[in-house]
Image (cartoon, rainbow, N blue to C red; front, side):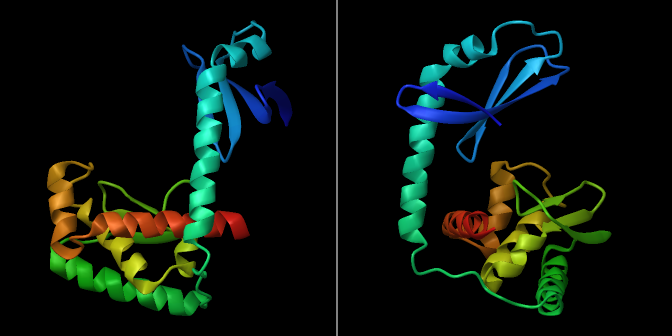
Length: 189
């Protein structure tokens, strides 16, 4: 991993050369990924320092969010359950919400996902993150309902959230709790 200094911080970064037209800057987990066009031959350090203010502001924001999440999760613990217990829980919610929403799932799969809790394809395939095993049942239910609602509305429009509000009127509080659990899982993983 490469390093550079921005103001009072040392930042780790990686460089990817891809078939892109413009330079892209991605910050995840306090680390920078620089995505450059395949034929880019400029100075990488200069490229980073052109966006120094944005990068620095994002790093400060990241630190502030982590301090807040550390405080919020002080008394929250990851649930320990077996894979069999987890599958029983998910199967129960899939059955309940498929009936409730009048939708049909073609395939359910579980895999490690790095940026989301689940996904749903227009073909009716639902993928859930294996990390759901650590969540309380009400959050598992929320994620399954959310993914099944995508079988009705594929995007995150107002129509979609109207469906979500029918079962989870306070869905924003569920999203906040999911952020807390995401933080804990990443911290302990």
